[in-house]
Image (cartoon, rainbow, N blue to C red):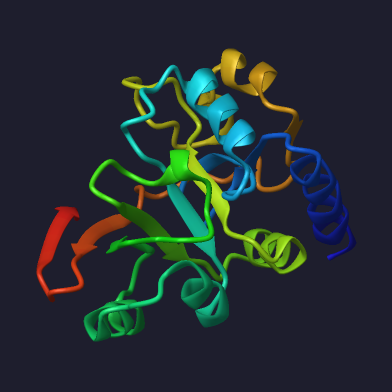
Length: 189
């Protein structure tokens, strides 16, 4: 537990200064930063060699944070989150209070409520959403474990969280797009 708290503290200090981190999530290893900091987000796009039109998702730790970013949340979103047996990312309309370069061209943002202890505690400290994008160069396969992450990514971040390095990750999250007019579209199962 002490190691967890220490890693949360170290990651928080880096993020607070506008840095980017490499960290374990409830799915795959992610590259992250403060979702309200456009400069930190730009660093992640550059590191991943990813076009800024391809948005990234953000992690949140509860209802309060969700309502801070979305004025309207479709009722079906709560049902999906309650019923999902595996990590599920929801794409919702009209986010606010986040950096403009994290919002997709169609004015949506992918979010995932997270319970994984490291991420949850980091979000408690940050009191802001955390960017989460797979730890790979755009177009390359998503690494399933820490040892599959390319040296380029490891060298390109400001801090690598020292937890769960042996863990083999399951698949990335399910992605479901929900619109405020109640349309539902599964993007990735």
